Every structure is written in structure tokens, then in C-alpha cells.
Image (tube, rainbow, N blue to C red; front, side, top):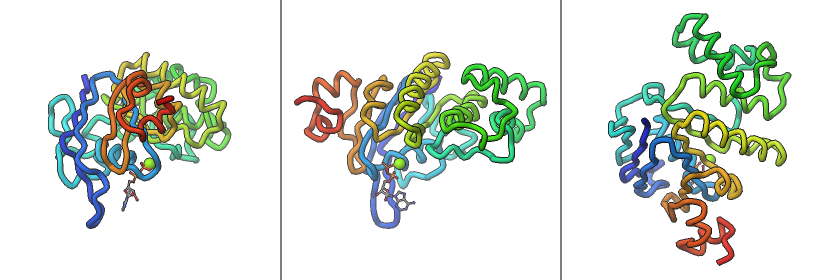
Length: 238
Ligand code: ADP
Ligand code: MG
């Protein structure tokens, strides 16, 4: 179970408020996409949920528990960024297992988990390679593998496909959707790409200037955009 609730989340940098009171519930197992133009606050909101950034005010609950006092690792959340941030000197297998090694899990347990994840992501034949020997898509899969191996309650993705070329992006969209179906975890996925939002989301949250413009399923937003901004962004004919 991992239901994520945001209650009146605000964030200021210095005197400038960039997140203006966000109220939102993401249901257990939901694939929720935050979409909106550059600078609207998507990454800041994701970092606040992960605990990497502290909100100025407001409350976050995961499964009804206030996580305000929990460090990022204690929140049982994994984050995948657009830059892969792999360790260049470690193999694919070592990169995937890194978090478990840090947690001093037994070697056999790490190997078992790494193999299982590599199987899921079709990386089994690449476990002994180094990141520089991989394609962009393979690197991104390793980054996702590093997140999955810890079996987190919630996955956060910040524009994970934006560095990939168009063909690979569409392939990875399908793979991520399959992965979500397979794991059933709650996923919060940030993008400025409407195609990703419309094809992957159970629920889309359209953000504009640090506030929610509309929340709904892809069909709801397409059929009944609440504002011209949403219509324009989603590509609705209205
Ligand atoms: P997005 O991910 O949607 O492109 P961000 O969350 O990165 O947007 O940024 C939202 C706003 O907050 C922007 O105006 C940005 O300049 C500002 N901002 C983000 N991080 C910082 C920071 N560390 N210091 C000051 N301003 C920031
Ligand atoms: Mg961003």
C-alpha cells in the first residue's frame, strides 16, 4: 500500500513562492503524471515528496503517516532522474546492487535481487559491462534497475526519457507502462511531454506556475479541458 497525500504544500526560495498550496491525493498503485511547462514547479514538487527538498509549509502523508520528519531513505521512495548518474567505475550489476551493498545486505541476497531486476529489464546479458559501453536506453534501464532493486513503495521519475531519441523514447514508454503493470507500485512521473502524459497516465496533474490547473484521466482532460491552457497543452481540439 502506498497512497500519497499532499496537503496545502507551499515552497518558497528566498522571498519567492514557487509552489502555491498544492492539495492532491495519489492512490495506491496509480501511475500519476505531473505535466506542465518548464519552470512550473514539477521537479520541486517531486523533490519535496522525496524529501530531498523541504516544503515551506504543508504536510505529506504516505499511507496516512506524516513523513515530514523522515529522511529520503526512510520514506521508502526511489527516484529516477533524467541524467542517469551511474557509477562509471562499477559494472551494470554493481550499479544495480549498489544500494543493497550500502545497506550491507548479504552477497547472495544482493546477487539474487540483481539477477531478478536484470531479468525484468532485459539487462541480464549486460551485467559485467561498464556504463560507458551501454547505449542511452540501456543506461536509463540500469538507473531504473537501481530504483527497483530496493523494492520501494513509491517511484518518482523526473523526465527520465528526455535525453533519449524519439524512437527509444516511445519504446521506453511502453517498457515503463509494462513495468508499472508488473510491479503495481505507485508511480509519480514528471514530464513536459504531452504524449508521455496521455499514453502512460492513469491520472494527469496539469501544473501551471506552481499551482494545479486540472486533475483528471487523459480522456477527461482531452474531452473536458477546464481551461484554454489545459486544452492547448493536452492538444484537445476545443
Ligand atoms: P520544472 O521542473 O517544472 O521545470 P522547477 O521545479 O525546476 O520547475 O522550478 C520551479 C521554479 O522554482 C522555477 O521558477 C525555478 O527557477 C525555481 N527554483 C527551482 N529550484 C530553485 C532553487 N534551488 N533556488 C531558487 N529557485 C529555484
Ligand atoms: Mg524539472
